[in-house]
Amino acid sequence: MKKYSLNFWLLSLSSFLFFGSFNMVLPELPDFMRTFGGEGYIGLHITFFTLTALISRPFSGKLTDTWGRIPVMVFGAAVTAVVSLFYPFFLNIYAFLFIRFLHGFSTGFKPTGTAAYVADIVPLNRRGEGMGILSFFGMTGMGIGNYIGGVIAIHYHINVLFYSSAAVALLSVIVIAGMKETVENKQRFSRQLLMIKKTDIYEPTVLVPSVVMMLVTFSFGTALTLIPDFSGYVGVDNKGLYMFYFTMTSLVARVVGGRLSDEFGRRRILQAATLIIATGSIYTGFSFNSLHFLTGALIFGAGYGLSSPALFAWAADLAPDQFRGRGFSTLFMALEIGIGMGAMLAGQIYNGNPDNFPVVFAGCGSLAFLAFIYLLFKGK
Image (tube, rainbow, N blue to C red; front, side):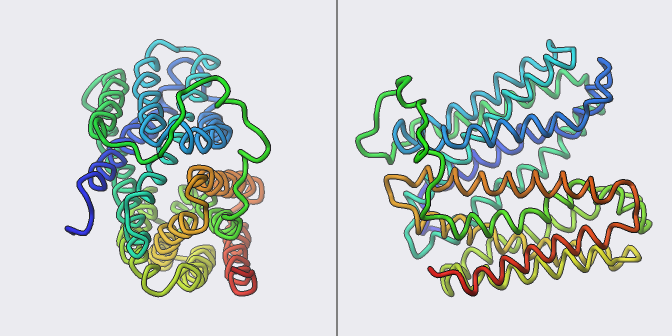
């Protein structure tokens, strides 16, 4: 992999550490909330986190293009480090949700700056592969972070987990310290840069990949919400096994899919990916035993992993150089809307009735198929 610079690998390592940091605490937060009577608000900690990430995207996009990639990445990771240190001291539900709200800013900033920096330094003919490798490191960090967080919580006090999360986030900053800024004629930070105009919210050149992103991530939001219950329904005792299978095929597909999108084009690879996602989602929904259920995870993961680097590379191709940060922030907003709406609607339609699993997952598969149709007929 000599074709990639040292800065690329440092960014990938930083992304691994960053995603590992905030995913370390995620599985333990429901039990932490129960210690101060927050049982009735457990679902809100994801909602607040996602909502802030969505709100912060226009700011991160504008600042990435003006203030610079490096400051935005450092700010995002620093927020994660500082906020993690405060969890042990905010022991009532309102203070806790406020902390989750602040924590969401980290995911609104760090990935936007990272994706824009990678698009700046990776050659166009390797952009898809580069995005695939970057997402491989990020998703691996998520998985390992979940596992290590659980180990720490079992063997040590939960406060040790929060402090460990802060330390890992700080390491993600140290890794990129000293890297050269890629934004030419960057501006000094000022309050004026925080004044968001209508044009700062949305980058029109990335409309097509953003629409596809929103349609395919409905399935992912649905899976995050319903797979634990669905696992028990088909006799899979380990409620994380489906997502483990999903993650394994997704990781391989991200690297392979990025390279294929460089060779055969983003649109063609995304057409294949949307069909695979539709198949995996529908197959999952109509599973009646563990074998079919986990086979659906493999299909779904392959399609989802295939789509991600192609979408990010396509956004980098389409967005003007001076608005690349805004392009990625638009794509991330589409991702968060898709996941959030998928999770919300899935919960409402399912409503505790296993007979509704096929309806929900078939609906998500239909949206992925709609993305395929959109790619066929929407002009370049």
